[in-house]
Image (cartoon, one colour):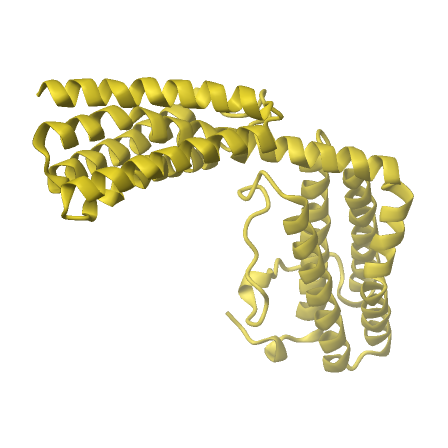
Length: 319
């Protein structure tokens, strides 16, 4: 990598062309990725990509006048001092807040680049163009806001907020809730069966750890393999798998960790209290995010949990 101060005017201009092309394609990528769920925001990024394309054309025109047709390929990764950007394509799916943060960082970096490039060059026409582009980048934020006002009407914003909430439910809440329910309910029987069969906290703890972690791994792979999200809109299968697996493990660990208490009967009572809290929490989450009436959610969750719990009690007592 080379220092920016070591570049000559031809190289600085070639770098500016490459940066504008990268920004244009980044805005295009954002717009394309948001088109299905956020068409009005996608229109904002399409307009910003068009602006970056205009910047690039002006840079290329001046380059041809000064240096001819051949433009060396100099990228941001060849010069020290630039922020490291992750691949836009690799980072999908996007959240609106994350995109806006990245856009702000892009605009600030472009502004600093053109200011420094203008100070470094001696050619009057080149310095003037860099100064003009710096001024335009400085106005880019207000331009983005005006584009947002043009495309993002109050109705459009409401629609996008509804879509974002729906995606949050599909990609985070639903797989997380499924994992929490599975981990909290399915591990009840083996944990309490082991506890009552052995009357030893240590044995119940080991069974609980094995059941919780094993269930988490199983649920993670099952969720990740269920669909790739391309048709259902449920997002990245890897993300869903991680969320489901983590919440499954957490659901089982809740009533496993009380068996760290060495006195068995105390540990058993604490574990039962934790189970009641877990079932109440699941009922609340279903009511809060899934619009399930609280009484119906409580009935569905509690009945299933109690049946599994008593299954463990009966089997453990028989042992």
